[in-house]
Length: 273
Image (cartoon, rainbow, N blue to C red; front, top):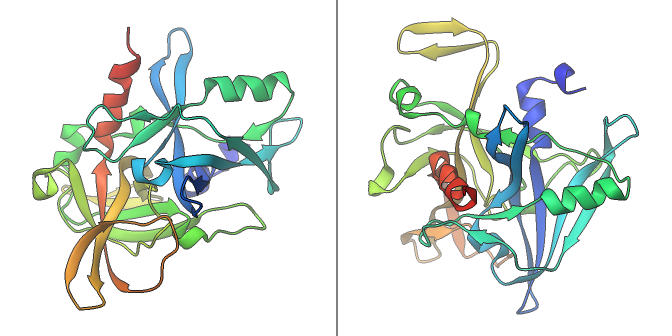
């Protein structure tokens, strides 16, 4: 089944809608994605984790993850979501407390599902999709990017699919925006988009510094976590994208900020012996 999907379809199976109930009685939603860390191809091992923003799951007392069900052959049943309810607090914060990322180990959950003969379908991302410095230096200052997420909690509920949005990089991916390992994006982002993976994804052809190339490419370049907006008083300010619905007192200006995907590697250092 996976071999019959194109890149843009595959990444929709890498994402998970996260619904939270917080200790103050409010509720909200955000986005997470599954990625395999510490992958060892020789012995076929890896550490599957779910990555999202810290501010999405912080103080959540009940967190629900929506996966896609699978049939007996392992094929996706798009119209049948499978929800996992998590009431623990085993989220692992990024080693740098100033980085708005957390991850949750999935091995125990996946093993329990397997023991109970419950099949879900997902396509994990791999760290091989994260571009290195050489790749970044050869990118353009204006690259087309794709964001997969659930803005204000919206999705194709019937087919259990996230919403794909498109934009461009507004600062060069090889540089650190405002001196941080972040990149500015020109893309429409609303509350609920927090934790969305950002890809450079081209199908058919793409431009390089040496001209047009025929073929496909995909890079995981970052994780959305905040953006700029005007306040009701007309002041420009930067905010984390709220995951709890609030009255409209701020106007997004379609500029988002992503944490560079290279910071995901820093999670791996926590698991290496």
